[in-house]
Image (cartoon, rainbow over all chains, first blue to last red; front, side, top):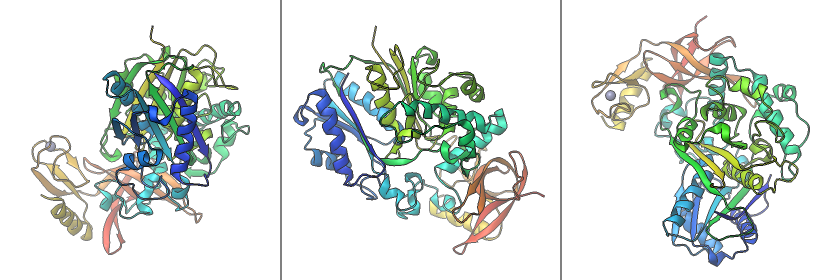
Length: 385
Length: 118
Ligand SMILES: [Zn+2]
């Protein structure tokens, strides 16, 4: 189902977001041995600020196609942040099966550097662009000294610690083991040795989260070509798929120590333990920890014990974020879904040089978007028997 | 009630150092963030009420500020509803700890914060 894919990531890209996007698309087309005119579909996503600092692109799928010269008969736009990438593949897959397109470009990413330069993130974009709304309740939210999105994840992590006894060291072991994986990945941004002790000793950003538990937003795009065309890539299929979309603000949720992965994984109906590798969203260590519980690798509250007991490296018994994850690759355009999907495809095609898990036939992916509480997409990729 | 009326009702109470919330007349659900329909049962029959101002910390985080200072932000449960707010505390506040509502003025309007009990 994948004809080609590519990911281009820079700390700071000297050029327009449109240029960066084109680089990724060209590389994916090259891998597929295809030309732009053979594409007839586009599924993509946008967040405020990620196209060269512009608050918004009017009819952005059209602008993207104008720039690329992509003539499409199927176009879809998603709005799930970090969960968009995995959903885009499913939308493309369905469109192709329905005969609505032959070859669909799934495009995810943007430039974080222009937003970073304004001293904000996409989740606190209202502080740089007062006319952008973050919620219908901004009148009563903007008065607080929050630090979104870090503070919401910190509230989840703090409560997780108090309810279940989860320790800083347990979360830190996730970051340290992912760093081990990153050391074998030529494309990783951060590759120096890292111990759990060093993670805990890094500056506190929002208690209990330390600097080295938090993803670094970068400039980057991922392009995935979903197509019936047979290329040199392995023939894969979707073995499980589910979405979960929650609407409540954390103060109005029953509790804040779970993510919508609880629902998306249930809908995917694929027993998590049967996968050979896991790519779980890692905007923060706590994000990954909560998903380990939510997809039922561990029961709720036991995620901390789980990451201590198991070897999460690419050589281990539970290979997780096998290329180092977004914590070490950077988070392109404030959305890490492309990082997860690229790594899964490298693993499944035996192309993960330096960090290849042996005998990978099924990869379990989970993307999270809109803080820890809004969107989750579970996608299991492998060969259909 | 439309959003504008709700905001007015909220601001009148906040400016008088009282913490408003909404209660659904149909299902008795309580919530803080103003909207014209109950998020639980969709009833538009809502009543603005006032909290007794006593609450408990649901979660908190101490945020390191760029100027070297620290600020505490949290989710606090008052009588049957929760809000996000700043928490005034001495570094010892914790989940389950008792707080009382207090009010701070920002741009001529008052907003709720939680003060940890000594
Ligand atoms: Zn109701």
